[in-house]
Length: 179
Image 1 (spheres, rainbow, N blue to C red):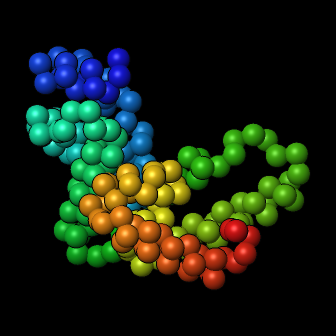
Image 2 (cartoon, helix red, strand yellow):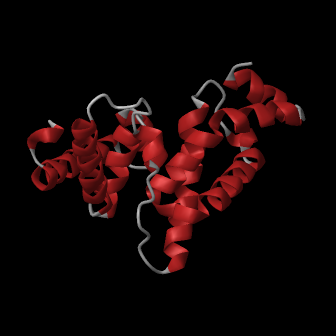
Image 3 (tube, rainbow, N blue to C red):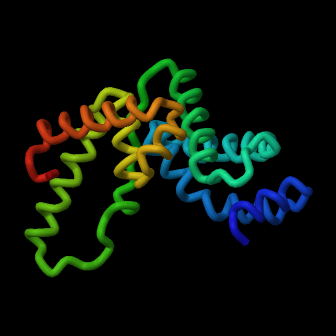
């Protein structure tokens, strides 16, 4: 069952169809919440986002992609959480989502790669919030510029400029190995 069919059936009262959407997008929603700053509270953010998405499913524009719409709700809920904390949250990134799980043939190469990842993630954590959000959506979540604009509720130009500035800062901080 594709997203459009699941949405239609959900609107008709089929909870199993909505459960299919939850199962399909749950891991991505958790990763999004964690990367945008929810940290240990990502589970709560995602649950609230799925509840809000269900309640507002009737306002979803049929034929549009569901993923960016849902991730926009996740981003809003994460923003609400971090704002209500009254402090800036650290970016909680699970290396297992981006790490190569194969056993390395070259222990020295594996150690160097691990060090590069750690330096890159620390540099991403230290980016200004708007640049961090743009870089996380574009490169960690692999969203297009248009999807990133929809998820963050920004104009496309803001996504482009924030991504460009963030990548420039990362290149400066981590070095040319990112290029």
